[in-house]
Image (tube, rainbow, N blue to C red; front, side, top):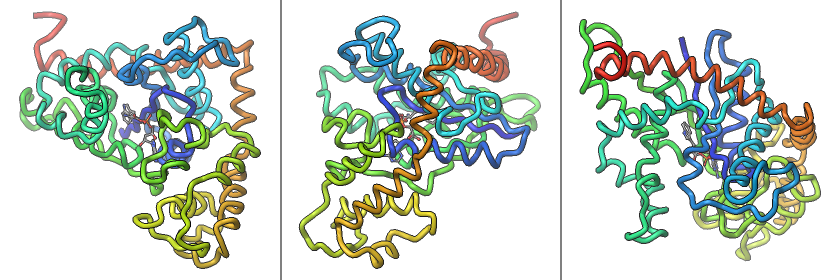
Length: 360
Ligand code: TYM
């Protein structure tokens, strides 16, 4: 049967880029998928620790379960899981879990890393960007091998489809390549039987890349050094959404609107955002024709976003309060149970194909 897998890092509150590039697509898939399709969405905390630990200064609104960096990670993990439910994923229909609760992800990662190409890893744009910032002597292995863990995430559940934003497509190309390398290294007999690892298909969101509001030439990111002004979190209040969009960087070229992501990244980003929430589904080009000036564009974009995210904030707050704040942890525990079963199936085959574990 088919299986969908995707993940999101718990490195901060999910934002409009995550929503349009991924989360909204996940909900759509849930609503349209055949009943027997497995739908698996993970909060990937093992990936999150490739970034330097962050001390969240104080415990945050919900109590962090410990201070310091560990407390911050725990808080982000809970928040991210609550957001998945708040945007409309059903904890019954889907498997929602924290990656580190399922050790098979790490185990398969090691096995895959014995086939993974370091040449290919060194060509990953995310590695090139992030490692350049850190400087050669401080480059860390986890950041380099990050895509191997991502490949394990997808392959360990036998995923057939992986819905992501454009920035992840290179990592998924790597996952397919690595699956092929594994299958070639460990062919089955009879040779007609399906290979141990399935190569998944990438499903790219139609809203591929939402850009930062303060630096519209780089993508909207949870870790943008420009901070909260650069992004709109999915649980922003209407006032906050309006304020952020009002102060979004555009340009002085002309007060007339035109859609050209190359020369007018700020204006075009707002048109993209507007388009993605527009009830009449007008293209950015059509919107550019219809809208008078930048002030109107900002106003109407903000209203479209406010409507598009209506209810998410309230649902999120409600979920965080449920069962005396323990509901999210319970969902995660139940999700982990389901995810361990799903991963076990693949791991049995992998161990047998390689000659690891169990009987000799
Ligand atoms: P992460 O946490 O950076 O982002 C989660 C999802 O949001 C999409 N996204 C965006 N889409 C459009 N515009 C943006 N500005 C934007 N920012 C983020 C991402 O494409 C992603 O779909 N490595 C992954 C997490 C991961 C994963 C996996 C994904 C780990 N294992 C296995 C798929 C399958 C990441 O860092 O996503």
